Amino acid sequence: MTSRSRTLLALFAGAIFGFCGALTSGVLAEHSSAPARAAAGPTLPWEEASLFAEVYERIKRDYVDEVDDHVLMERAVRGMVAALDPHSTYLDSQEFEEIRLSTMGSYPGVGIEVAPEQGAVRVLHPIEGSPAQRAGLKPGDEIVKIDGVDIGGDLADATARMRGSPGSTVRLSIRRKGSAALLEFTLRRTQVEVSSVAAQMLEPGYGYIRITSFTETTADDVSHALLTLKRDNKESLKGLVLDLRDNPGGVLEAGVAVADDFLEQGVIVSADGRTPEARFRMDATHNGDLLNGAPLVVLVNGGTASASEIVAGALKDHGRALLIGRKTYGKG
Image 1: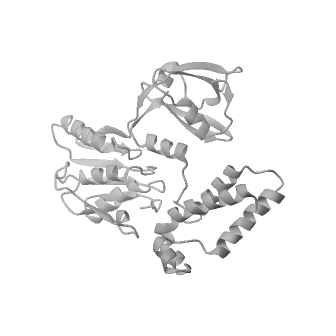
Image 2: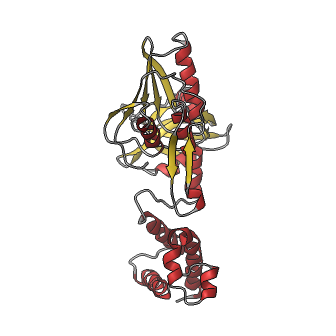
Image 3: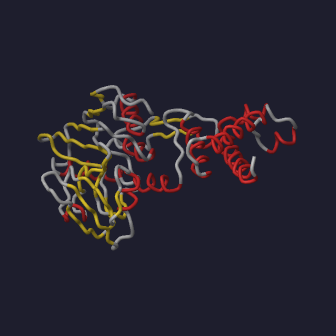
């Protein structure tokens, strides 16, 4: 084994010990050969470390293509975490920042929702009032280049390139159905405000609120939507439909706050885990039901997940809402 390989293996093992301590400290401690080392923290059995080193060296030496050390180690970490359960994922700093920005309710960019489709990145829709909408981007547009760089179907790269400091510009090359040539758009980035809540009246006295995800602003947006619906109906509602279909979740505290809007008391969510921070309980704050007991229906489907399931489950378990739809995702 080369000196470089030993160094990488040592760094890798050190990082993994720190990560796994909360997950498997009991198992790892059983393999410690000395009490002093057990007290200092769990260590990886030498047989396992030797196996990893052997596989690592074999890949470096025999694999058909040369593999960068950093890439190999990162993929090893990703594979290890992904194997824990369907919901565990390793995030590097850039991916974590993307997750953080997506839950803030605003971000610096051009204001379009995009998705991968058949090897391309396409516009789902431009956000109302955003630079993208004002420039004329349309749903279905394919983003081919950003600042002259081909992006193919790399959604993460496209998203990162479109974001930037407010006031700066970005050039998008767009392929649009019916147009033979690429369309060029130069957009000036701004702070885009994203609302996860939409509301309307279904008929006099009956309101509808849709929550697409739970961000840091969702709870306030729901409260504001309820107040607006009440004002438009002479301060009262006969009933409300809360639509959580295809809502993947998001910020747990936001979901708890939304459930709290309709509950007088009781447990909204509780958790039990191996670490102190994984054990908690969140109750209704006794601020009262903003609907004053009016009937509440919650729409759910297979895309209702995580924080959305917590909201739906709490309202159902307390007899506060009728759930209508299909079985939810199963990540509560």
